[in-house]
Each structure stands twice: as structure tokens, then as C-alpha cells.
Image (cartoon, rainbow, N blue to C red; front, side, top):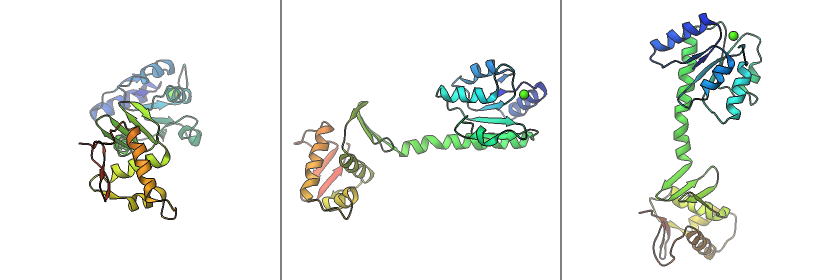
Length: 225
Ligand code: CA
């Protein structure tokens, strides 16, 4: 999406991007631009600053306040306050200073889109899903069928460690070292108590193997099958 009031610029950009097989939407004033830019189909916004109706700074800020995270590249004039453009205040992703070459802008667009594509992977690494269970390592949250399970920090640590090492059985000493820390003195029984509480919170039957299996004489294993 291109929001730019100077027709010579917006038409040239539209042509350049169409040649590169992008679908292009154009708006020539701020109000119209803001309305169109909120469309979730839009993958990237090229946003001029001086616009009739509403300026680019305001559009950027309003979109971010609405929770719209579509990447934005601002078209700035020399001397405009770049730190404010990119900083928290407005939340743009990049900027290009006028006058710019079409190739420069295309390169920025590609770089920003590439950066965006990578993010879903990062999210996946921080989120574990198996059946009804969802563990969010960033938010320290565990959910079953979408409802939050309140775990203590140690219970969460145990669950996370078991999931991340689910290809093997983990003995209690290792769990103590990894979850409580090497210099903390805790009895091995403590692990069993925490593990029992964790399993109960996950809705597991202590007499049957569920997500967490207790391997007698050895330790524990996460096995969602
Ligand atoms: Ca302008």
C-alpha cells in the first residue's frame, strides 16, 4: 500500500512495484490512507509524512495504537526527525529519504518483508503445542484446551525442561541441577513432590501414564503419545 499525495511519485512507485509482481493499493490523502491501511490483507505500507487530511506520523501512531503491526516504511524528507520516526513514538520499521531511487526502496521493502517472514518461526520456538497442551516459554504460561494452568516457577521449569529434552529419560539429579540450580541444596524427594503437583495440575491421573511418565528408579520422561 502506498500512501503518498504527490501523484508523480505515487504513480512511479505503483508502476515499479507492479512490474515486480506486487499488488498495489494507493491512497493520496491521510484519512483515506489510514482507512485502507488497516486492511489485514496489506503486507506493507509505504507512507509519506506530509499528507493532506492526516500526516504520516499520526497514521503510523494510530495504526500501532489499533494493534496493527503491518510493517511501515516512511518516506521522509531530509532533516525530518528520523529517531522519532523509527522509535517507540511512531513505530515505523524503516525509512527512505527523499529523493530516493526506486531500487533503494525496493531493496528496503524486500528486507522488511524478509524480516517479517522470520518472525513466525521465532514464535514457534517459544511455543510448544501437543494435543490440548500449549506451553508458552516467553509468557511463562501453560494452557490446556485454552485455559490457563497456574504453575509455580519450579513446576514450569520442570515442564519446560522435560519438553525440551523429550527424546530421553531425565534423572532427578539432572532436574535438580537444571531447574533448581547446581548450588541449591534440595532433596531428591522435592522433585517428586513438585512433579506430582505438576501432573495433578495438568489433569493427569497419578496411577496412569499421561504426558509425563515416571520411569521407576530413573527419573521422568515427557511423552505426549
Ligand atoms: Ca507529501
